[in-house]
Each structure stands twice: as C-alpha cells, then as structure tokens.
Image 1 (cartoon, rainbow, N blue to C red):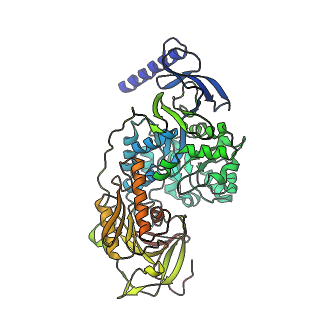
Image 2: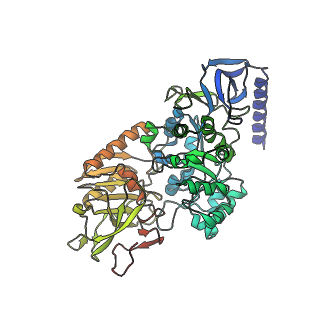
Length: 588
C-alpha cells in the first residue's frame, strides 16, 4: 500500500509540473519551432511550435523552454506504430531490433513473441519483456495464443488458459495475440474458448488470424470477439471482414506482401478501421527498405493522402490497442515525434522518443547505447540417435514435398523412390533430396525423414533451428553424412543456420537466443545471411531465399504437404500420412 501511495504521489507531482509548463509558469524542457504539424485528429497540417515537458507534449505556442530547436519547416508526425510484428523474424534481439527501426521513425511496435514462446514458453515472453523494458522505444507484446500451433509437432512449451490468465494483465501486453486456431474457435474447443474468455474478461482486444475465412464461418469467428486480421490477401476478403466490424491490418512483410492489393480499400470512410503492419521483416529488408515507413511511401505512391497514411500508422493502432498516450501530437500525449523533409519519401530526418532524440539522418543517435543482452541457457537438446537419417525401403513409390518458388505453400507429389542397399536415398539427378526434422527441445527425442523437390542441391546440406512454428531443427541434404555435420553444427552453436559441403562448414550464423535470435546488429546479420544464401547457391540451389523456404517446410498449418518431427502432414486432411504411397490411395 505504501508503494501505491508513493507511486500516486509521483504521478501527481508529474501532472503538476506538466500543467505548470503548459501554462507557461515554468520553462518546458524543449520547444520545437517552425514545424509543419500533422494533426491526425482533424486531418490538417498546421504551422506552429511543439512544446515538450517531462516526456509529454504540453503546448503549441511560444512557451518558455530550456532548449529551443528550429526545425526549419520539417513535417512533424507522431512516432510510427507497427501494429503486428514478430521481432524474431529479424533474427536479432529486442535492443538491436529497436536500433534498426527507430531511424525509420517507428517508435512503437506491438510484437507477438509467438516464435520464442514456442521454444521457451512464458519464460520466452518474460525474456522479451525484460530485455526490452529499458529501451528508448515502446516495445509491447501481445500474448501468444497458439503455443503450439498444432498437436502434430513437438514444441518446447505449451501455453494454456492458466498461463494466459497469469500474463494478460501485464501493462505491456495490450492484447491476446493472433488466434490462428480458427477451427478451434468454430468448433468450440473448450481450451481455445477459455483463452478468449480470459482476454475478454481482462478487457483486452483479441487479434485474429483467419486467412480466407468467409461467410457464416467468418461471422461465427467474429462473434467470439475477434477484432482484427492481418491475413487478408484479396480486396474482396478484406472488404467482407471490414464490413463485419474487423480492423484490417494491411501487411507488407518480407514473406507476405499484401499492401498493394489492399490499398484500394483505404478511403475516407474506411481508414479509421485500417492500420499498417509488417508481420515479418527479415534483416535485409529492414536494412535496405525500412519498417512502417515502407507502407507510407507505398500508400502515397498509390494516391492515398499522406495524412491518411500517417493516421493509419499512428492514431488507428493507438486507438485499437488502447494506447491513448500514443499516436498523436496532442496535449498529454507522449512526445514520440518523427520529422520528415517531405511526405512522399518519408525519410526520417530526426526521431524523438519521450522528447529525447534517438535517431537522425537515418542512423541511431550517438547518445543512444544499449546494454549487452544476456543469452539464456541453450535450448538445443539433440541426442546421437537423432542423427541417424537412414530410411529402410518399404515400398517403391513415395510422397514428395514439392516447393513452389517464392511461396510458403507446397505441392504434394508422388514419385519413384531411389533405393540403394535396401535404403531410401537422395537422388540428385531428379532433385529428390532427403529432408529431416529433429525435435530439439528435449521433450520427445523424435525425428522424421522424408523427401523434398525444389532445392536443387548438387551436393552438401542446409540446416536451421528456425523452423516454424515449433522451431525444431530442419535439414535438407544430398547425403546423410553432410546432413549430420550440419545438424551437429547447429546444435553446437546453440542454434543457428549453416551450409555444409563434403563435411566442411562453408558458412554459419549462430542464433544462441532460443535458436532464433542473435545479439549482433541487424546489418551484420544481413551480411551473414547474404553469405549463407550465396553458399547455398554455389551448391546449386536456385531459390532466392532457401532458408526462408526451409523454415516453412515444418509448418503444418500451411498447405499442402509438410514435415514435422512426428512425420509427414497432409494439411488438407490435417493428419499425418505415411511416406510410402500405396497404389490404392487417393492422390492429394
């Protein structure tokens, strides 16, 4: 009780100082002169000054201030908000992620720690919260709702209704994360409904994930209280969901790019129900393109009013998530500001968080430093028997996962097996390569081996501990020996990505944080990934991003045929199927 009284007293004192500064009775901390202020409430651009005290905006006139800065006619907009992103996609820790997005004007991210939660459970969520708590950015996390994504894989943890109830009231958790298990909603799975009920009782919005859902099923999904969706891939789908009350998150990520398709839906009657998100941005795209500023540029180039584009990246997500201290340049709001030279290129000249400059000229401010993040204990638990990739030949025809270039969906093929000495083996001439998923959480010790077409390797192996969603180790190769070397290298790094040829490691990237994240800057990670891709290409792989393709081959909620540590999954049947194809079976 004494702590509460002390905290209340501090708030009262801060309010008193803010009001005094707003009335000009005491000097404010800083006044930004000669700004062109983007008013996200009225839609106007107003000339004036912005006055800041105690990290908050207190006025707009020539109030006294300790520091006065002439902004020389720059546009002043609220700090940008990414409404849905997985930090793990950048392969770097929260501090380095913030260092990458702040120079682009993104001062707030609402991240779903779904990937690390599948490895470490609530300990992973705690890690992300703790390591981002003192950053000069607003790093918020929705509470992962689907850990694991399915029962046909072994994840590192399970997050059930009890864990949701324990964490949902956290001040930095504004919502329940994307409810990917929409079949569980529609068929009234008790555990799924309990998670929704906990979030509803806590007054937190529930993010959706319902690709292609329509008609009565969509209505039923929304009736459960789902409020948003970032998975729309067509204008028709987005319009139907918008009409039924959903907030539409327009996504432009590295893996899924939907913004150009959905942009025509943005209008004077719809923008207030639409917002921008990246979902996933790989290191290369973060370095070369940026964050939410990418969507602003795209929107304006397609004829959308710049102020509307800014509203969708500030006011709308702040309103949706109940972040009423963010998202606008207004009295009492946090002084998160981004100054642009123009409203076409949206190149951030200066970026401020709580009135303190954090970036300028596209680089992090020299005054901003981060403590070295701690690395949790290794999550790699692979035993010797899991490194035996031999397959006894028990038939002549086998199922084959067929890659669709530049897509995360696959096709299901049937082909003649290559048999040597009673074993199924890879056939490089037909691009028929062994694929294996090895459970690495120490929970089951399972392993599954199958075949894939599309990697085009003439020799060698590729392996990674990034394998959605349970993030077991996945490896593809032309020989068992190279596959073994690759998996051992990933294990010994504590997780990561590796390219091996003839027993020799060509390139590697260590990801010691849950086998997903590095402590390196995004620029260095991007360079190492580039070298990994080049090494894969040198072995004959034609894929633009072979490691992204590899990572999604273990995701059993994306059609058509995938491989988990439990076996081949026919996503359409939502069941595990045998590798050997019987002639009396139906083709998928």
